[in-house]
Image (cartoon, helix red, strand yellow):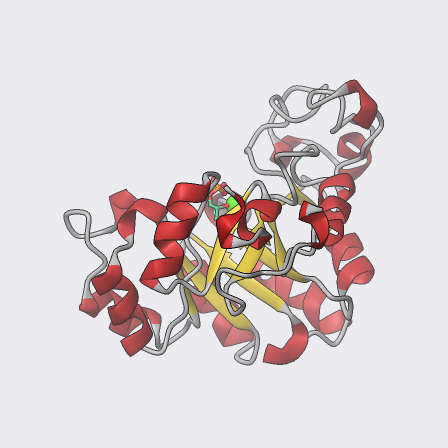
Length: 260
Ligand code: G3P
Ligand code: CA
């Protein structure tokens, strides 16, 4: 079956389940993380934000509107209030009662397991001190080294730098979208800067080609493009030599090359 298929295309390319296996379960919930484990993803990705009372919770949008039965901004909720919301029903009634998880719960459940966690720091400008909070959650659990299977990434490069300063042995990643490139190109100057505080440069999939992947590797960085949900693009990216693929459907990356 697909779930047990070996990674035939390129055994060294990681599959990263975007917001968990969010094609098959409500994003950023334990149900989606458990599905990604079942599908043998190498990592799952989570989006971290902070409640009014300083709890680190997992949600993509700055408001709860799209992915829960509530309305309003994450930063205006207490943890108790956000925990009372239903984060599953919007996706499918069979997920009714899913709760908004905390970063701590995910670290407790998955640290030392077969699956790693790619932690995205969302909108740090809205949450002063969130880098310190994340560092504290990791330190509390003795997650301080590169072999810990935890990576912290952000589109906000200053936040990545802060994490690197606080925890120099934790792997970090720079996310990059079109608007952050120089005319659609990731430059060598940018790569030279990223390599001083990060181990990964994780771009929009459309920013990669053979040359760019080659230059990323020359700078001793790895690259995990986002968010790739079709087999054709996955195949192309594997040919470019990417190190991982962030996808809503981890089985698409793990299936044999000749399956479609
Ligand atoms: O991990 C990369 C990807 O999650 C970035 O985009 O908007 O889904 O957080 P977004
Ligand atoms: Ca994300």
